[in-house]
Amino acid sequence: MSQTDLVTEITKQSEDFSRWYLDVVRRAELADYSPVKGCMVIRPYGYAIWELIQRELDDRFKATGHVNAYFPLFIPESLLMREAEHVEGFAPQVAWVTKGGDEVLEEKLIVRPTSEVIIGTMYAKWIKSWRDLPVLINQWANVVRWEKVTRPFLRTTEFLWQEGHTAHETEAEAHEETLRILALYKEFCETVLAMPVVDGQKSESEKFAGASRTYSIEALMGDGRALQAGTSHDLGQNFAKAFEIQFQGRDKSLQHAWTTSWGVSTRLIGGVIMTHGDDSGLILPPRVAPYQVVVVPISRGNWRETVLPRAQEIRGELQRAGVRVMLDDRDSQTPGWKFAEWEMRGVPLRLEIGPKDIEKSQVVLARRDTREKAFVPMEALVGAVTMRLDEIQAALLARARAFREEHTSATNDYEEFKRMMEGRPGFIIAPWCGSHECEAAIKAETQATIRNIPFDSPAPTAPCLKCGQPADVSAWFAKAY
Ligand SMILES: [Zn+2]
Image (cartoon, rainbow, N blue to C red):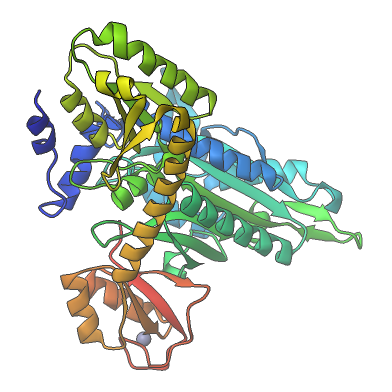
């Protein structure tokens, strides 16, 4: 395959962003369709990104006092039925198990769409006294939600995630936990994924089924659509009452616990692709790049005797410095083909080394994000590589922030709002009265939903965009994935 074939295999973003996304997922071998409708296979390159995401998040959860555990995949029907809003919210998406072998089950089981009910049942057994609180457990797991329309990483019937479930003595502590995790998610998305997010509270109609309050982080993708990147729910005492999570308080009275739940999923990988990618393919932030540097030896003359040994030494040096390196020493492909291939796969830095470079004791470093090339003396190589990786990480965040700012506007006028949503979508900040009717009408007419009401959102200075009644808040609207 030639270099041009590689490039033409990816649709241009400007032609069809959605097609571009699917092309990148397939060509970069992040995921593939499976024989099971709506379910994807996460391929090794995509899974390596997930492992890096997991490690970074897991460290953060543990540093804030959480521990991991594992609960069953199956949930008895009767448990799901105990929290009324929760059932109503999840029932249409539930996969059922009705038979085990030949035997029809006495009680049907569901495949977990989320684990509040099974974990709540266990917490009711474990929590007896205020001394048992807080309980701060996280689970890394798969969940199943029967989806009609699916797209790799963004929406699939089965997906991987983490779900935190905590129980607390007081309402204030549970609320503090909900917001602590939201802040943790935001910091993670921005420093590790270089993906800026808007943090705030969901409207009533967008909140989690059974929650008192839901908070989210929302990112803006390259096509101007928003992506809900993570959620944190303050469940109040709703689940504690449904599942009898009760404890003896400090004053000896019997009280219901206050619980929270929160999660992020493999959807984040879709977010990374659509935040940073370009017409040549993927651009990975160094902190989640399976390979941060690809070493491409220039295969001229007797390069296996001359260039390759030096390339191998360089790989060793970089690995000892903690850099993730791929040395592409394949004979079957030309250097030009390899350049295009690793560019398409989003490797942040390419290191080229040929016979002339060895004579001059230098290498070429090429950045994926800016395509800048520089000669670097070999003796200063490790420092130059790690410095550039940090620069790329920061530059990607800055670029994504600038893009979001360019695609965020404000209006008090509904006609203008409609025109903006049709033309160049992005976030639109607009005054909203808080009524579900206005929110639903705006959604029906423009496809835009309230993504959230940011914590730092200024008080509205104009009446509700839709109905003209006094507005409570400035909401952030967008068309969303
Ligand atoms: Zn209104």
